[in-house]
Image 1: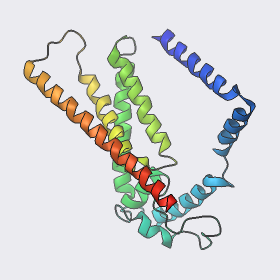
Image 2 (image 1 turned 30 degrees about the vertical axis):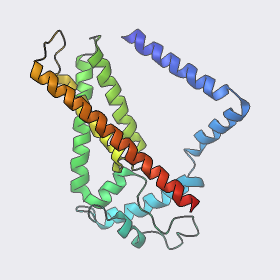
Image 3 (image 1 turned 45 degrees about the vertical axis):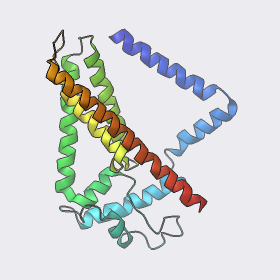
Length: 232
């Protein structure tokens, strides 16, 4: 298992090195993008910083109960800086570009605390099961590692975005969460599944495929709508 993990890490570093040094132009483009992640004096990070500062004012004004679910867009104008237009801030700011801050501002410490408790419990349970089965070389052990990495990716990404509020990312996040918890209850070995359960799993799989297709279609409609709006 250790050899597999080490080999995957080596392959990842090789791929990143090839991507970085494939051409001088690409190298310059990638390096500038990496540097822009930590720049707060210009670009989108400057806007995010202003939004986060204003959102923290909302939290300080309504720390326990928040302003109410879905009220960020209505409340934010009362807390944004007076010179918001000159600094490049949109007159209609819909989200805080940080799921944790927006959740806290809308649902207060009570709602945010409960959600945070759920996330910590989820990650702890999955991590504990991975450690417990670290020596077992089976599909489900690797599946839980993949699920944990996927969940961490979602949570890190939402430090500068709110994609858990969109249908498709939210569906996959909570699907991963359910998968990560349910895997620990799967018994490894040759287990015969009753015919009735096999039929249920078959129809359930079809339902999941249909849901994924619908979510993907809904997600693409957002991009098409934005594209047509820009053309208009």
